[in-house]
Structure formats: structure tokens, C-alpha cells
Length: 638
Image (cartoon, rainbow, N blue to C red):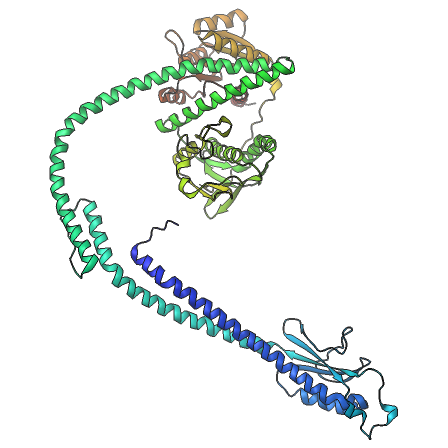
């Protein structure tokens, strides 16, 4: 347990906790012992009264004298705590009663016992046993003597627990008062001890803090003896040495500043060259990856035998692994470059939870896990797209590292915030690793770098997105007992929203799509996939060729899909604007790019055109096209 307590607090803690624990333990032991004694005493007293009454009732029951029994019952009621007395003969006939009437028991007649009736009364039963002395009484006629069983009847005494409970409350109050006095005395004594022990140390700590801030003239008063004196003298010597060293370092720093400035300029030029190289390399790598993914999707739609189908699935899995790595690196680079901006707004969690439940149920079922998404109607103030990415990463991570059991997604309102929690029954995370798992490429249970367990980028992206939106994020976990990741988000009031119904897949049939890409493989793969979806595709490698193709086909584009890098004077953004100007309307458009540099994303945001980085998954491309077509219909007032 890593507690950031100062020395005074620690001394107080060490002094108070044992005393408080011992005081509570002794108080509880003595109190419960006393309460038990009070209860035992009451039971013993009631039992003694019942036995006395049973002994005294022997003659009356033997003779059947109700008058004598009534007097005995009435005299017994003179005792405190008694609520009722009843005497029964061997036939369970009530012979005498005083106070509350008790009933003879149906079972175990003639057996001594103590029973509790309700919460405030005891029922004590004592049998009346016939003795030889009664049988020899000459004044009782033989014909009146009962025969057979030696039990003449039983006596039932009702004892009130009210006074006992009152004594218990008094005893508890007294115990609490004693504990409070002991605690107050312990606090006072601990405070005095803490002040005498921690005062000099806190003075030295403050001096060290001031020295650390650059106040090298600070000195510690040297008082007392032993270790504290040596410590104070050492701090003073250290401050003097640091003052001399600072003067020397200032001179050296001044001499080294010019050299560092020159090296910094060289490093900045090298970093700029590196960035250009990485952007170019990334673009060249993403182009064939993008084409490969689209070719695989188009190939998978065709008829194949079982062996070829399995081969296609393995090829698709390998391509997806490479795509995940590229996308993860791209997300990290965009967040680090500061080109991703948050757009907080009132956001309903209902559709987000529904999508996660739908998307991940199959994945959970394949692993034999139970995914539970607790429905919620809460609203939060957050960017819906970035928040969905956070929760998707957390849920995917939980399913990946959980071998058996379940994963739970739940939202709870906590004052002015909503806490989203993702709980799993997985391997758990040791305390010393709970900070490092939010760093890039850190995986605790994947030394062999198995791609099925991810790339180690998910939690790094989660932390950056949460920091971008100002959401608190945390983790509770124990090894072998699962983990709980949580995100705190400001609560928001519900607002009226308009649900845009996405167009069904069949509405892509006949949709006129303009495709622009100077890479022949990328153009062919994209055009082939769009045609497989039923689109009418007009493909070209530049603006003039595209407009000529539209004129020749005598159609107008319903949507444009263009690569960013194009030969000649136009890039993807300026080409889209030129096509819109040609047809005098805002044609929905989508930009594809293999560039990972922040400048491309900034320009796309400025133009208001969505950007997808290559390689693009077919499902994501299809969803974006349908979304843009729905947006087009909305702007027309449909």
C-alpha cells in the first residue's frame, strides 16, 4: 500500500491504530460478556421462580385445589419482570392463571425448557413432579389420588425482556462512552508524541524542499543531538556545496548553450527529413495493403471450394493483422501530433451500448465467455465517436485477456458524473504493472508477441483519448481476480435527437460512384468491390479523365471516392472541389489516403471531407458510403 503520508501522520497512525484496535476489542469483549451475564441471570432467576412455583403447586395439583393454585400464581406475580403465570394439570387443563395467560405446549409436555416468545418475552416451563410425601398424606382420600404418570402437570412462567433490553442499552452506551474517552486520550497522547518526534524532521524536510527550489541560502537550525543533529549538519553542508556547484554549472551551461543550439537545429532538420521519409514510406506501404484488402473482400464474395475458402480466410487474417498494426500506429501518431480534436456534446449511452453488445456477442461466444451489457438511459457530455473508441478498446481488451467467465459493461451515475466500467474475470494485473500497461506495445501476458492478443496499443490510445476529452480514467485489479477499467464522464441532460435511418444495403444498387486513384491496383480493387456491391463505377486517374468518363457515360456522380495523392496540379481535396464546381452542387465525397502525417488530416478537416486511411476495411468503407448518401438525402430535405 503506497500511502503518501507525512511523518507526523505516520507517527499518529502507528500510535493510534494499535490503541484503538485494542480498546475496541476489549470493550466489545467486556460488553458482550456483561450482556451475556445479564441474560443468563434473567433466565436463571425465571427458572428458579418456575421451580419454586412447581414445587409449591405439587399439593394443589395432586388434590385438584384451584384456590390454592390461584393464590400461588398471584403471589408469584409479585416478582418483577414477570408478565404471566399459568398452572396446568397432567391433562393440560388450566388450573390457575395470573397476568398474561400462557398456553400449554402440545409437545414435550412435562419437560423443563426455556423458549423465547417474540422479541420481548421468555416462556419458562417447569414440570410438577409427584413425590412420595404427597401420596402418604392421610388427609387426601385414596379415591382422589391420580394414578399412573408421576408428572402432575406443568408450570408456565412468562418473563419480560424489556428490562433486560434496557440494561443492555445502558451497558452499550456506557461502553461507547468509555471507548470515546480512551480514543480521545489516545489522540491527545499520540499528537504530543508526534509533535516531539516529527517536528525537527519536518523542519529538515521543509529546508530540503526550499533547497530543491533553488533557495541555496536556506539553513537548518542545529539542535539536539544524535542522528537528528548529524542530519541537520549534513543538510547545511549539502546546501553550501550545491551553491558552489551551481555557480560552476552556470558557467558550463553558458559555454555549452551555443553547442546545444547548433545540435538542436541539426536534430530538427533530421527529424523533419525523417517525418517526410516516414510519410512517404507509409503511403507506399498502405497503397498495396489497401488494394490487397479490397481484392481479398472481392475474392471472398465468389464461389470457392472448401480448401480455397480456408486459404482466403488465412490470407484475410494476415492482412487484417497488418492493417490493425498500421491503424494503431496511425492513431497514436495522430493523437501525439495534436490533430485530433474533441467535439463534446450531450450523448446518449443507449445506442453506444447496443452497438457494443451487437458487435462483440459473437466474439465472446466464440471464446466461451458471457458478455453482459447492462442497458442504460444515461446521457453524458462527451465526443460520441472518441468515447465509443475508448469503450470499444476496453471491451475488446477485456475479451482478449479473459479465458473464462464473463465481461460486464455498465454505467452508473455518481453525483455530477457517470462512471463507465468494464469488468472482466481475466488474469488480472499486478499493482507494479498497472501504470506501464497504458504505454505503447506493453503486453504483460504475451512474451511471444502473439497477434491474437493484440499489439499493445489499445490502452495507450484509451489514455490519450481520455486525456484529450478531460475524462478521468482508472483501474482496479488483482492478479487472478480480474480487472475493472473505469472512465468518469460529466453527466448531461437528454436532448431531442433525430434518428437517421441508414439506407439498406440494396440501395447501393445503381449508385453512381466516381473513383479516382493513380495507382492501378488500388483503382481496380476499389472499382471491383464497388461493382460487386451493385454500384455503377466511373474510374479514372485524374480530374480530366474523370469528367470525360462521366460525359461519355452521360451520368452525374452521386458520390466521389478519391485518393489524396494524385499526379499533376490536383490532389484529392482540390479535385473534389473542382467536381463540385463542375456540377454546381455539393457532391458527397470521401477521401482515401496512405499519408500518416498530420497535415493531410488538418486539410481534410478544413475542407469538411471525411478521411479514411489506407488500408480501408470493406465494411468500414461500405458504412461510410451509406452514411454519406443518407447525409445527402437529409440536405435535400428527404
